[in-house]
Image (cartoon, rainbow, N blue to C red; front, side, top):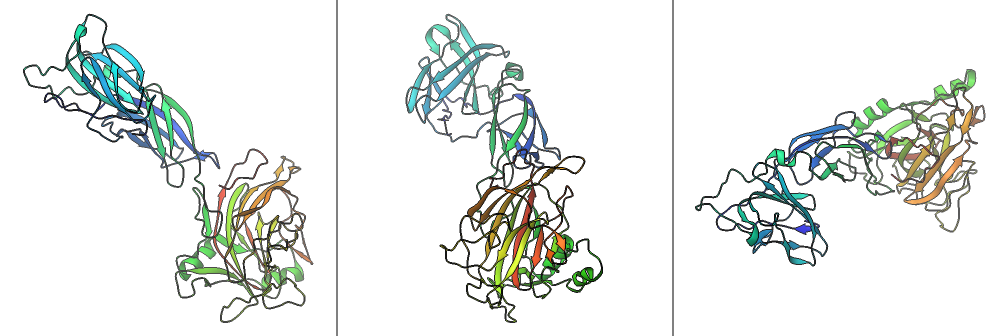
Length: 492
């Protein structure tokens, strides 16, 4: 046990059993921190016991029943034991608390004392019933959330605690305390666990406690290439299950983005459709199970963007991208710091990740010289709004990642904007934007402006831009958040 290692000593042939017949009626609700939404399927269990429940779709649970087999700690062969009028326990550290309760045979409480160990190792604690009385009943020893219940067949007050086997036949049927003895005196811990969330332990002080809302936090995670989807996230593109699965994923999750245009402008969008393809992953060229979403190779720049069908407001997003440069039929990356767009060089690439189809995080060839900082229209920038604070660019043909926390702009019922959007961005694990107040200045629709949706309260999905060069995407996922304040510096 982390606090106090306690075990049973079989003394004079009497088996001292582990157990607790306490009946509980505990209830509560489990939420996850990022979205403050219910967590269905979480396991809730009395610490060290067998009583457990699973949360329903609303995150609620009820632990109703008897907790048995309280044995969630290591067993040693030294303590607890009664000897010479005292309880002997072995402590892992000084000051560890030990609660000792004595109950009569009918369940009535006789004594309840809290002790603290003086030192690490074996400690003696004087435990006596009221002076001058004889006692038959039970002793319950509780520490660190686990309990041991012992049947004491005979206790002589003036002489201290003694075991008696009553003619050598221990009563094996009465090792546990009667339920009535613990009806309203229970205390302990409840452990709550759920995959992809951190375990949480909550204390309770009564057997019928309402534990209220239990909020589970997220474990620290990798903010870079290969980051798995966090709890509650939805996957927009995986790429790890082969071409057929990826094609189905593309069809189910994405659509061609066509803004509200007509005439010749609409014809251009129609002509450039379906340029996003499923292609192999250049990192694993021989692995047919690993594929990518490829933006290539329409020369009508900005007319072949795709938009996620599922819309998002406040969200955590992860997008991995790889710049390849000019399309190469052999799917080789074109090397070089091809910054200049005109004249275009083989290593030049251009695309973009649009939050809510409005706010672009730039994906565009740039120098790999860490001393050369990108501008607000360069790689890593919130386009035409903020330049990244660092250059962590990787060469063409290498995967890169954006981890983004986004808070949507706020509007009143009449459609008037009350607050701008806020964005934080981690680029290849390095935070390059911290809670930026984004204005959407690059947003607009027109003959010469193919950016995204106009600003407004209507929600749209994530958008990927096609700009006539070979850019690959994979491992795209998002999680809806509920950010009460304008704070996005959260790398869930």
